[in-house]
Each structure stands twice: as C-alpha cells, then as structure tokens.
Image 1 (cartoon, rainbow, N blue to C red):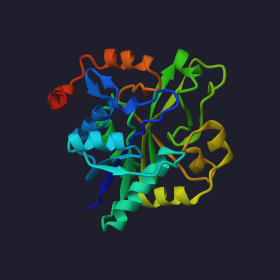
Image 2: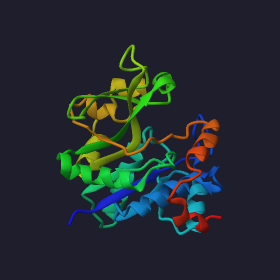
Image 3: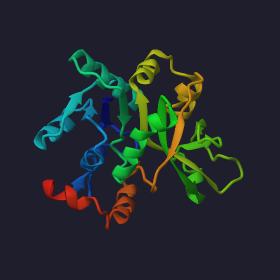
Image 4: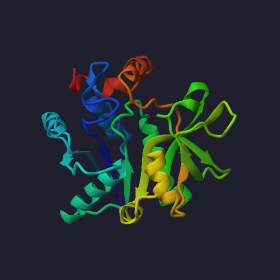
Length: 252
C-alpha cells in the first residue's frame, strides 16, 4: 500500500507577520488548527511540523506533536518539505506521496486534504494543488496567488498580479500542494527559475521546467493568514466551525 507523508512548514520569522504560527485563533495557536485538521483528515501515514525554530519545537513537544528541526536557509516551503523527506528516508522510512500543508491556513477542511491525497491516482499526476475561485479585491491583492488553468484544470501559470487581465473573477492557488516523492526530489535538484524568483512562487519552478501541476478545487474558501488583521477575519469565518469540537479541549 502507498504511504503519504504530511509536512506542515512553520517559521517564526515571517516578514509580514512575525511569530504568526503560534498566534491564537479562537484561543488556539494557528499551527494547532492546521495540525489537528490534518489529523482529522486521516490522509497522512505520518504527519510532522517542520521548522527552523526552537520555540516551535518546544511548543510541539508540549503537545506531543511530531516535529523536525530543519535548516534556516530554505527560500521555499517546498524545500523544507523535501528536507523532511530526506531526513526520514535516512532514518529508514519511505513514502510514495508528500502533502505540503501550510501552517498559516487554519481553516482547511479535512475533506479537502483527502481530495488532495486522492488526486494523485484520480488524475495520474505527480504534482497536485488545491485551488478555489476568487473575485473582487482578492484579484488585486499581491498576497493572493492567482492560477491560470486550462479546461482539464491543469495549471499553466501562477502570478501575484491581477490575472486574467480585465476580469473581476479568477482562481486562487491555495497553499496545500501534493507531490509524488520522486517529483519532490526532482524539485530540489532543479535550479531556481526566473519567474519563481520574480513572483516568489515555489511552483513556478515546475511550470518553467514543463512539469504538469493538476489543479484540484477546494470545497470551501481558505483565507491565508498573511497579516495581523487577517486573524479577526479568520475568527469570524471559523466561529461556527464544525471541526473545532474535536480538538479544542486539548488547547483550551
């Protein structure tokens, strides 16, 4: 049977929102929401928080959350996930798939993590990425990565700019991305690409090397927490969340 590794990258030194992984959302650290909802999905044979920070390591230890101390030199979350895969393989473990589950998207629906994991076999794709329709102000928000997709939902391009041009609606790339282990290893052996650097988007490295990325629609919108003001927005959106009851007593 195939095995899936789930990696939640988190670091304290966010330029736009320092220390955000441990900021409370409804009284619970943001990183805890991400971890617990990934657990609920039952999609990962092994789930680990990957961080360069001792503070996050100590927090994870307090709550018996598996964690790995990774390099502080990574430019991309994808590179951090690849380091985790390398560490675990050196310890004798092996995985067929790796899910990169961002530590700043606390609203993720466990069902969508399941969809992401199932997409490898459904689409016979080496790289899969959750996406969702957006409109209005999201289209001009530079923190929102837009995906250009074709009719088969393969992703042809990513950009932080307003795209498509002169439209009020588009498609957002969510931070939940899946790789076959071979694809993730290929990623770190490829040079950083021009558009990856210009757009500051990991997945452009695949696009510019002609490696297909399959878009998979999320069942619900997810607000990435990029700024302190996003906390209040996420709390409003999660106020009647049906998954909170399954883990909030662990942290409150």
